[in-house]
Length: 377
Ligand SMILES: Cc1cc2nc3c(=O)[nH]c(=O)nc-3n(C[C@H](O)[C@H](O)[C@H](O)COP(=O)(O)O)c2cc1C
Image (cartoon, rainbow, N blue to C red; front, top):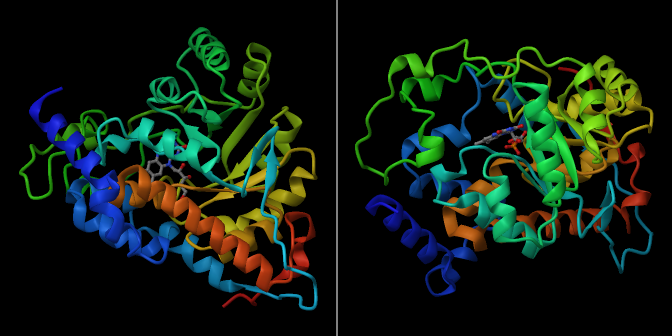
């Protein structure tokens, strides 16, 4: 561990320590306010990397704005003295249908952050969807239920080795990110000369000068998985005895193809507005995808979830569960592990009160009649 890592580890410990965090942790009253604290604590490079979207950030904003176009139509005079938010997702029981989305680059926030978030998920009893650092994170805490996220391996042999390894280590499913064909064109990172190497090494403290990346490293046309096609699903399923979930579906045609090719689950996602700009908001894409999947595979969604009432709308439109990407990172940056747990707790508590006020005592009673979309425009 070098001096910078040691300092950052100490800061992480201090942030997570109840002695220091007690007062602060109870300060923010919603997920948005965790972001404000995180912004103050993070280096600009790191904040922009996490908060940002692609190009003009149309989709980043659309993900949030779209919730305002779906109105809840609550029911009354139902007994909501007990409200049960618990669910079971592909064989894993969770206290609420709120999962943690895979986010690369957590080391921009704290060293060993993947393990810290894994512990927070274990304490919160939620499912942790993790890509980078997964193996170390689950070694550190074997009690966490986790899904392993991949963008597909360079060779089938590598994919097979990977799939078997994560199965042995207890992953409950594999999620394959299908919207990551190329590194996208993110203006904030380009402007900051963001060096993707920081995702591994971490960034300096706020205010500290950084070496700008060689512009070539931030350039476009960096391939990730440009040759991933539908036959990958069947092949992966033959290599491993785990459910395969596709992350990044927006079109009903692709949902039909996913089911046809044997996907065990679908995540409606636009990568939090970080891949192609101008694509449909996820809450708007959700109902058509649910219809196209036709109940043959559970449909989950992510993108812009910041409130329990957002989750309720997604559930009403047919989502089995939602995932949150940035909110746990804001919790992490603000107060370490305790902050992640607090954000997850808050979203669960907000969902519960929203369900009660909508007259829904359990998830099974939530259906599309609970929401109405305002006319376009
Ligand atoms: C900092 C960051 C890194 C991410 N890295 C990945 C990744 O490696 N793989 C992936 O499939 N999605 C990744 N995503 C997208 C998230 O999994 C998720 O789809 C998105 O964040 C949901 O939107 P939200 O942040 O508004 O909740 C990342 C998102 C963020 C914010």
